[in-house]
Image 1 (cartoon, helix red, strand yellow):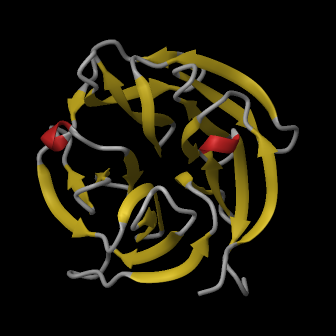
Image 2 (tube, one colour; image 1 turned 120 degrees about the horizontal axis):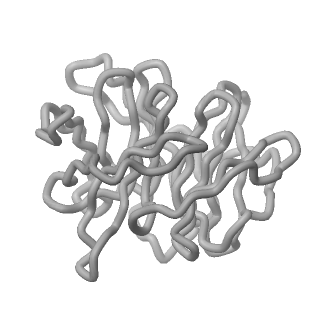
Length: 217
């Protein structure tokens, strides 16, 4: 299997970049080191705004002109989905418990949120109350997710202690999506975002954000 094609590798605004999403013009990153969200201008690579999250920001998705963020909260690391209005802040009331009190990455298909469960190797589509309406199995443990035009892209691994990670595609428009590994990611990536042309992920341990394309693209 061929490796992804790295297009740029940039210093993260904060150490331990964990979550990523693209809202149409801004790249959003959440750091486990600072527990802040950062609005990054992708052209100047400068931070336009930052805000403290209610907990460790594990996963993130753009939902219209808002963000939804999986936060690890309390000493027990309980997982909740929070609402953030860019350039305003987090909603103090909005809070959806993650199914099974676990979840690390988040996606939005235009109607439903999708919560990934790393070690359970599955993605759960949930309604506005957090009830599970669909389960999508993954061939690998999941550490990144983004939904593009009805297609779910996952970043996953079979052994997180290695540098063998994979970009996998599943078509959510199919009743039983078939997983297809597209490329190898030769470092322990975290999160996925898509800017309309290219993918983004975090090389968390290197404190870097990587823009890449598929081989042959």
